Image 1 (cartoon, rainbow, N blue to C red):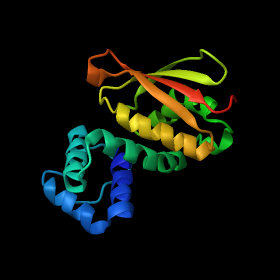
Image 2: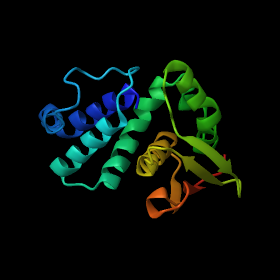
Image 3: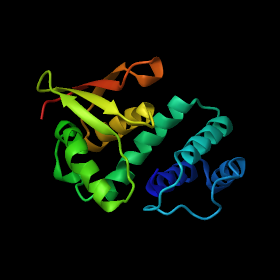
Image 4: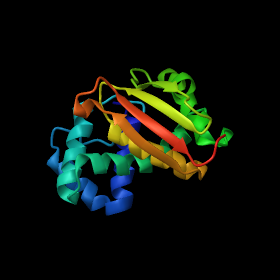
Amino acid sequence: MKGVVFVIFEDFVVENWGEETFEDLMDLCPHIASEPFVSPKTYPDNWMVDMLLAACGKLNVTPDVALRMFGKFAFSRLNQRVPVPAQDISHPLPFLISVHDVIHIEVRKMMDEASPPNFTYERPAPDQLIMHYHSKRQLCHLMEGLLEGVAEHFQVPIEYKQTSCTHRGDQNCVFWLQFATAP
């Protein structure tokens, strides 16, 4: 996993619970590097899992809730780092459609070894989107938080429902989205 995610996770913990809490989490994960995380560097996926589980134990939240909270927090930070920012788009639907074919391509160009999730889309109505989420990491709850961050950024409410989930044994995760307004 790219270091940018670790850097943003550190910001998430520090801004919400303080530097001491983050240091406590690191103490619970002794195999994780003692040096600061570097955005373009690649770290083992299990380090993020370990940090997340340590945070869940310390903060008394479940992993799905923690991932959703982190995803919502992370959206604005990730948006600032990608050359195709959401500011150039005025509605969340075209932005979300651009994630796979524009944003993730740019991420792969900027960061060696990046492996963001893959998306395919369906448009059942002008104000609806179905997103098929394919990821070896199975971080669909993070995706839920990112959707909440997108809605907040664009100030357009998004009602979403996860209709399929790998955690329930489905082949991939599918999100049905209803936007308060059509683009």
